[in-house]
Image 1 (cartoon, helix red, strand yellow):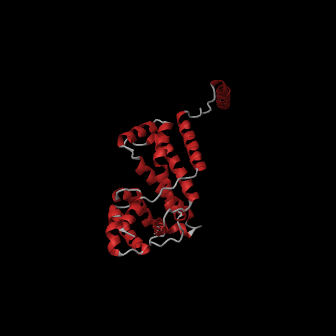
Image 2 (cartoon, rainbow over the protein chains, first blue to last red):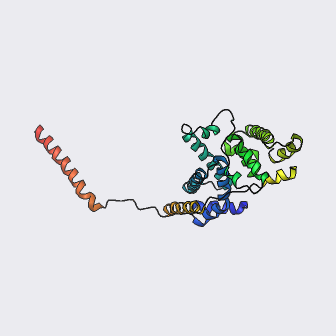
Image 3 (cartoon, chains in turn yellow, blue):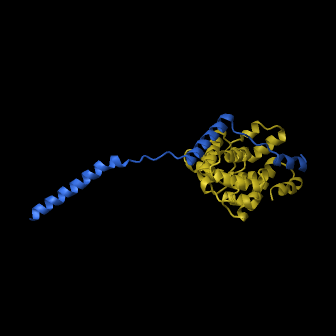
Length: 195
Length: 74
């Protein structure tokens, strides 16, 4: 979506234009859902959080800034909703606590993407991604898969760019060891994808 | 596994879609919310005809109260 179109949609959405909402929904729905699904690894949770993300956009539509970037706005809200979900489930479900924990801990919940992977390589990557601690997983998803710059991913996650770079570096190391690729062949590649 | 394969695979990991029921529900709820923004439900306003008897009662009570007070001090 080019910036001119996006600014026009922002203005129309601020006026409550349903067609503008549909255009934004069509553009970003799959991306936001995939992000939530890779974070939560549960389809039902991802769908609920997705619905709430879009409802938040509608509720805030009148107050959107004229220079709003839908991509960053939606991913920030989606990520914050996931954190709130984790907080609410902290006591009930220890597996939801990894985003809140001080120390990164590998996750044991497989990703729904593993079962539908088209190739063995894809399955291995999805499996390695699903087993990253949540803070590193979200960093890799935002930068490596969704194409955000590290500074943008840092803003979405509410951390400093330096903290994001550290998460990406640790994530790269963990992916390397999980995928069991030789350090020499993998490091320059993953560095290119995950700076 | 070559570098090129891993790079392309990571960048091309597929995106999932919510199921159709979920999509339809989201659109329905969001459209309804937008419509409510455009046409908010009128708040119930009591017409002057309904307020006058109540106002008259209050004024009457105040007058009676002060009448009693005046009578007491005469």
